[in-house]
Structures are given as structure tokens and as C-alpha cells.
Length: 416
Image 1: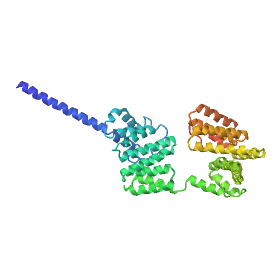
Image 2: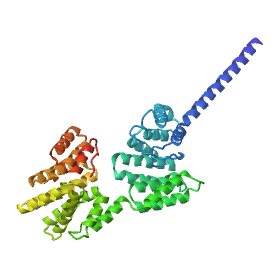
Image 3: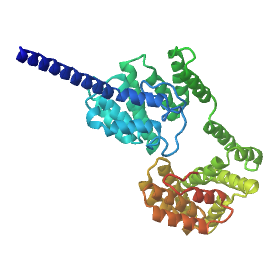
Image 4: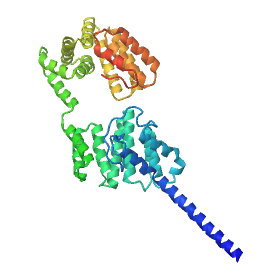
């Protein structure tokens, strides 16, 4: 009997141990399975979502453009959860949505490009759902913001379209489609997409609908680019001595007017001059008028001095040299605009040399943009030296150029 009692006790103890172990496993497993939900909850409760686009499953929080380091700092509530998930990678990988959680955590710690790769891997699975494709769109959009690569925005649009093919009723990709079109500056299509979202989201007093309506209202208003384009068309129809329209455009768009004179109209003159076309005189007259009015209205002198350098070059028989310099400069500026600094640097150097040969202050402008491109190529020391020389040799009346030098201290800092 004692032996039988001992055996029974051992059996009961063994069963209890097994139950306890199973309970611990289930509890632990449940905790691991909450990684994706924990990330979504952190975004939903943050008070300010880190991305313009909607992450799948996250509740509404106002979007505020994050300051550098706010969301990718361990001090951030969102990043704290994300860092915890990444610290448990080996365990999180065993979860049902573990790979998705790791990709989202990577995105939330500021590594958009790495997150894109991880989410693209997930989309190759036959089980990839709309949420994965939607979050891939979020990551691609964030990568586009970081790199300025418009192709990433196109890829983000393709991802949300795939998400909507899988689940036509999903609201996140529908919202994100409108936001991506807005980022692409396709205003008419964005407005239609925002309207479609407002119709699809039937939740009473939905904060997402309220936000979408704000975007819709903005998309339906003329953009600053639209207004400048209209002003530019008016400038191009005025008589050479009609200053009222030009003055109005300069007051409203001083930077655009100056930039059009320096880059657009002078290069148009150069192309027409080299082709011996009659419209060369008209382009030069427009640049001359804008330059003269800039000098009168706010003292800005670079464009006027550039036109004077052309006049001098023509008088001295070097009109072709001046024309080639401005055409070269335009070619380089387009490369800068398209974020191709490596290709732009040697062409800007050539433009600077050509401008210097005709004693044009545009040589300083070419050097300034070359410095900005060098910053983008991570040649900070050389770029800083070039900026210092632009400041040293530029006239005090070259206000915009000198302001650009002051503002260009980091990669992609140059504008104008």
C-alpha cells in the first residue's frame, strides 16, 4: 500500500508539473503573439502618428512631421516597443505575424529601406495579405521621403493597388492611395481618391474622414505652383516696358521669378542664340526686365548683372561663349533637380569655367550648386571650401545667393 500511495503521489505531481509547463508555454506564447498588436497599439496611443500613411490596424492619431530623432529614439514610446520587438527577434520569428512585426518595428526605428526589403520578402509568399502590401506602401513612401526618389512613390502606389485588389474594402490602402497621389503632386487624381475614401469610410464621425476632407479641400485649391505658373504666363505676354505685371509677380513669387530669370529665360536665350533663332531677343528681354525690377524692388542684383555680362560678351564678340555657358548651367540644374549630384558636379564645374571666361556672376551660382551637390555626395570638406569662396566673392547685393550659402550646411540643403 505505501508503495502504491507513493506512486499515486508521484503521478499527481508529474501531471501538475506538465500542466504548469503547458500553462507557462501558452502564456509565454500569447505574449509573443502580441508583438504585432503591441506595435499597432503603440502607434494608436502615441498621440501623433509617425507616418502620413496609415499602418494597417492602427487607430487614428494626428500626423505631425517628426523632428529628427523623435520616433527613432529609445525615449519614444513607439520606439521603445519597436526596440523591444527587435531585441527578441529569435522569439518573434516564431509568431504567426512575427516577420511582419519585425519589418514594422524596423520601420518604426527609422530604417525605411531595410523595412522595404523585409516587407517585399513577405509579399513573395502566396499568403501575403492586404495588410502586408499596405505596410509595404507605407515603408516605400517613407523611403521616398528620405531619398527623394520619386520612383519609390510609384512603387508605393503599386503596393496599395495590390492591397486593394486583395481586399477592396480595406480602408488603410484606400486612404494611403490618396496620400501617395498627393505626394506625387497629381492633384486632380488625389482629390478624386480623397473623395472616394470619404465615401468608403462610413464610420460615424470618423477622424480619418475628417483628415481626408482637409486633404481634399487643399487638393481642390490652386497650389503655389499653379499660381506661379499663371503669373509666369502673364509675364511672358507683357510688353518689354510693362512693369506692373512683373512687379506683381515678383511681390508674390520673388524666388520663382528670380530662378526663372537666371535658369529658364537665360538658358532659353542661349539655346535660341546658338540656333540663330529670332526668339533669342525675347528671352533675353524677359530676363532683363525681371532682373531690373528685382534690383529696384528689393535690391537683388545677380540676375541684372548676369544680363549685363551677356551684353558685354556679345559686344566683345563672345556671344556664343555666353550662350553655351547658360545652356550648360541649365543642363546641370536639371540634374540637381532630379537628385543626380554625381552627374551634376562635373557639368557645374564646366559651367563655372565658361561663366568665368565671360566674367559673369553666374560662375558663383554654378559654384554654389556644385557645393550643394558635393554635400550630397558626402564631400563635406570640399563643399564647405567652395561655399566659403562663394561667400567671399559674391557681392552684398546677391542676397539670394548669399542666403543660400548660409542655409547650405547639410546634404540637400540647397534651394533656389
